[in-house]
Length: 90
Image 1 (cartoon, one colour):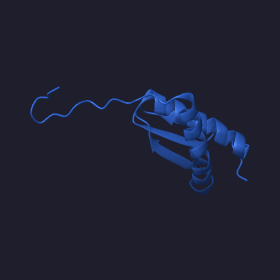
Image 2: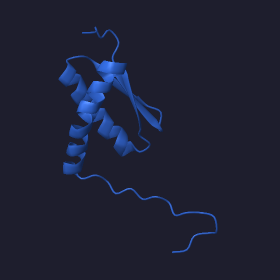
Image 3: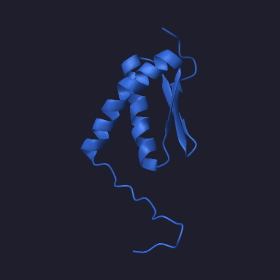
Image 4: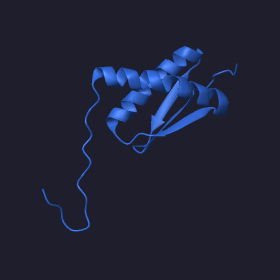
């Protein structure tokens, strides 16, 4: 398929299957937990609904791992994961 001069084809994302999604979440949990404990927040590019869902799952698991409330929010381009309000340090 040809494209007009100076343009490139749209990127097509292949959806993650259940195993890939589980492995992605498991792989990111230690990194996000470390960043939260060291910096208080973690920011990642999450520009698709699927990535937002993956990192929401990561945020839930990090909260369970650390035993503290963890929240995530997205603006459609980035996702930020941080400690929830009233979360005591320690």
